[in-house]
Image 1 (cartoon, rainbow, N blue to C red):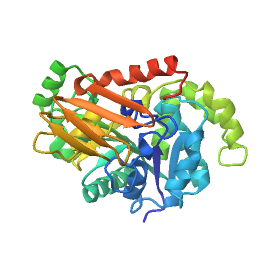
Image 2: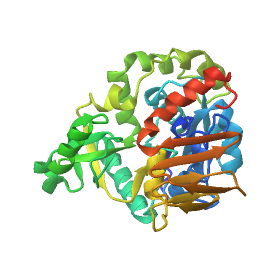
Image 3: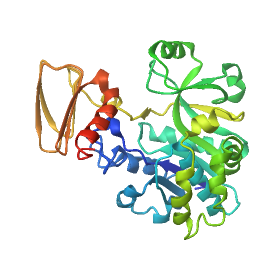
Image 4: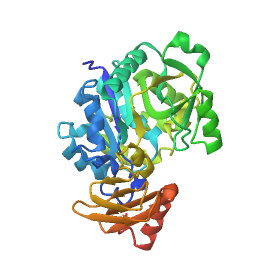
Length: 364
């Protein structure tokens, strides 16, 4: 195992689109969606264990979740859990982790893979092969490498990466990026899908520490000013106090918009290892086993009558009897029952916001 390899896992989200199954006190990355006995976070850490020493795995999260992470990953050093005092999107999250890695490797070489804690990978062996190849590539090339997934449908819930097919023969699976596009409408997604020039943006990144630090300083100098002030304290006992003071002053910006869309040395590696961004009830439905009428029942028992293409999850030991519904989400947890059309699941986040106001955060 290469001790120069590091892994950063972003685990600070609240997963509001999976409400009420996912709550503020236990968001989706800490839940066992498929009854395997492993949460999404645990599965993420597990798949990196053969590639990165556990002492080189960093988890960036909210301070409220530190105890849960230590409970779920007990061999992870407590100091490897980086706690953000507030939410500031992915660029500050990544900058903080890179500053810590820089302090940890004390000016030496470090190759880093950055991943979210809530993605599902079905082909673990191929995933490890791809990550190992990518880490080897960034160790030798001054570039920012992202992973792109071959689309299987005109999905509107993912971002897209346009690649240069003319250079594919020379570059193999790693190619220059032409453009990034945020979640498109249906018509544009159809064009992307049919063109063969676009990949889904997985949100996974690989780079050498020097490459990403140079890019952050060039494209986000205001952000890096905050961390440059802490060069002598990050990695010491004074780090927590420094982060509490300076992290809230960081701009709220994503790494995609702040760096990846601007840098000239961005590459994409085409991969196929059964990836899914487990971001919505609809994506969970697509990945779950179904009965003959397309119904999914998770963590509970369900009986369906004249019902098709529904997803149901209840607290353990409860039974749902569903009659006459088609394409619905039925989810119950901790005193909340949600019944929502799958096609309207994008409204769930607003529902959560409304409920917080109506009930003073009781059900959030």
